[in-house]
Amino acid sequence: MGDGEKMQKKGQSFIKGALVLGVANLVVKIIGAVFKIPLINLIGDDGSGYFNVAYQIYTFMFIVATAGFPIAISKMVAESIARDNERDARRIFQTAISFLTVIGLVGSLILYFFADQLANLVGIADAALGIRAIFPAVFFVSMVSAFRGYFQGRQNMFPTAFSEIIEAGAKLLGLALAALFMHMAVSPALSVAVDWAKRLVDSAHTQTVFASAGAIFGVTIGTFLSFLLLSVIYFFSKRHYRLAHRTETVRPRSVILKELILIAIPITIGASVSSLTTLIDMATISKRLITNPAVFDEYAFMFSEGTKFFEKALEEGWTGAALLEQKAATLYGMYTGKALTMFNLPLTLIVALGMSVVPAISAAVAKHQRGEAKTITESTIRIAMLFAAPCALGMASLSKQVLQLLFNDYNAHVVLSILSVAIIPVALVSVTNAILQAYGKVYVPVVNMLIGGAAKVLFNFFCIPILGIDGAPLGTTLCYLIIAVLNMVSIVRVSGMRFHVVDFLAKPLIAAGAMGVLGLVLDHFLPLSRWIAIPEIAVCGVFYGIAVFAVRAIKREDVLRLPKGEKIAAILTRCKLLK
Image (cartoon, rainbow, N blue to C red; front, side, top):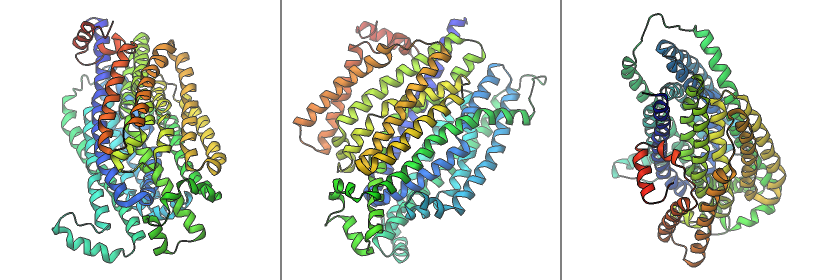
């Protein structure tokens, strides 16, 4: 097998890995939608606020404990395997899982013992119960991250994919618990449990607090099941990886741990900056909304007489500061539960690209194949833009239809329309962070994230009291636009790639812009209905596919990297859709 054929096989493996994770993440997102959409309809915007505060705090602790290690492990394992050193690859995993077990235990204990303080920090005290419900998840997911990094380093994405699906599926148990606390018996056999829940929670507000905590406990169950699955896969798969020679050089555990930490810490800091910004965003949104009560007037329809919020306010006797705090929690729940849920959905494949590109580029660089690394870099950015542009402009133009379809209301359509634009810079940040890390420039994303995060915090602090909740998505867009530009400048310098404005930006944006205009036209002439929304979205999707080929946005080398790429390219060429 020649070098060119090997390089093509490697490129196909990289794309195949991204597709495996992309499909798995799509399944995860579908399961998440099956979980999140009825959950929001069940516990309302205020309950969604309590749930998301607890989940975001957990996410921050999870990132601090594990964010950089899967990438560091995958990078080091890929390099060891590229040098045919199986013993070193196995020792990397053993060292990492021992260290991460300790990190996970510490993180879990912090969540449990400081739940009240963390909830008060973000200004929503009712989230404390949910934080305690999720504290064991940090311990289990720390060990899970070691397994995932090990398998990804081997460019075997199936264990990660399966574990993610299992982890997501367990959330449905959390949905059942939420229904229980909302006094809903999904079967006659649960009537006794419902009677118990009625005695435990006797007011509508307490119901919502316990239901949000029950829902988030499903995440804890999921991480435990994911850990069990990966443990079994590792036990049965390690015998298939042959230890070639006793003379293989195996580094001491202390040396491996030092390298792991040196790679992981800057990645963790960069990821933590993003999550920390989310936490500061939570505190800023809630507290800055309260500083100017007039900003609630724009969403007065959510608090007026006849709404569930109005009934709870009467029952609990909320007045003054307490009433404003609950209004802020409800708006935050609307923003995170509906707008952010839809915003995160199209980023599935982009995350998969980022996870897959690290070992692919790392292995190419380790073998001094700079040309192959450059080609993978260019393909990754181009594919990310081709996917992100239609999602951003399509969702912005059809925000009412999307929300009406899934939630049967569209009170979050303004924040979703604004936030959707941020899909493009967020997608670019996701893949460019991974690319820079693969090239060994692990501190560059950290600095860029700090700059963008600082801009977001300042924007929210000064603008939310003026713009209200609509200022939050604007701050997010500004933040990631700054980071994306800085990252792209760094990648051009590091990789030597040429930034083709027409190929990377103009063509995808022209195709997506035309689709967005079509969406606005359909929105204007067709009535708002959750059933009409489905064909509207389908029509726009088909139109974008046609527009992409019309402007020649897809290159032959991108298609050739797909599984069965040569056959697909031949078909597209015969149809005159590909040069």
